[in-house]
Length: 341
Image (cartoon, rainbow, N blue to C red; front, side, top):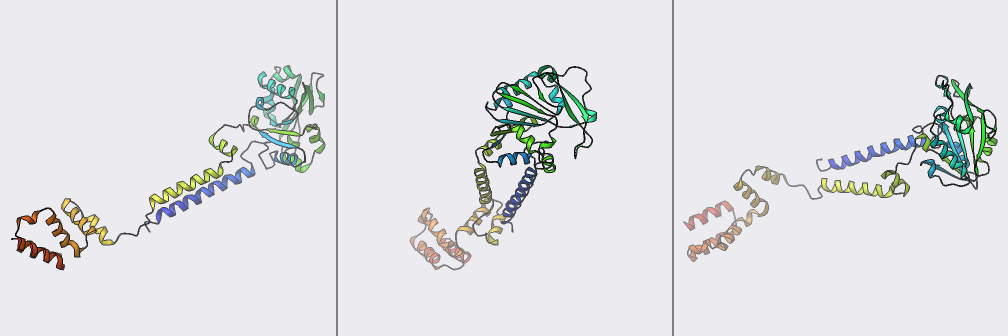
């Protein structure tokens, strides 16, 4: 039982690792660990249904962006920027507006969808917000009831520039070769919103004719960190990691379990009884020299060390005869002692 205990430890560790991996797999599959309106989230608060639906249409290419907006290559594509906080967006620094304008000027159609906010969190500031100064649009809040958002207030737009086209809940403005589209409510694009009412016309208008669609996750906090785990997923090294874990398990098994037969109990007693040099030498002899060969081995070593040269040849021959005869080692030793005296 003692030799099998490491095997049980390895099996228990493997079961525990599998359980933890399975738990994380279920959590990631459900997506409730991601922020609301994330395309990685599969429950009612995410936008994975929209991501999968567009990806299932022939001719469309759908991807996710986990890097800053300036890293997105310019070109004709639709970028979904969903679940944005109206308060944070309205008072963000100019650099953030410049990044969106640069992305749109490169040919992209940037769809910025805002989320509803609790009534107590609506801004009470009297100063002009940066979005009003730079883009010429004022954010106001009005009561609105959505399924699952009964206690929320929705955003409304008041354009102050003729460059904007649309209405109080959806505005669009051109920037260079592309455009920016403001959507007061992201709810119609959520999984729950699409389940209750499929706004195909609204989605088609937002896509605009672009065949490449990007769902931005960086503004929701899902940023590519460049970690070892991220690089392993990027280059599909999961199999290598599993092989290294298997090798580590085999190494632990090899160093924990002996494949040799267990020692006999008398040998264990011999090992534990040695307390000084004499008893250690005696134990060593018992382990390596059979009792029937003990006297013959001792006589051979005695002659090899030339101790027998001090005795007459007749006595040496008698000692050899006793050694070759065998028998009880103690009795043979006593007889040889009397002869040499």
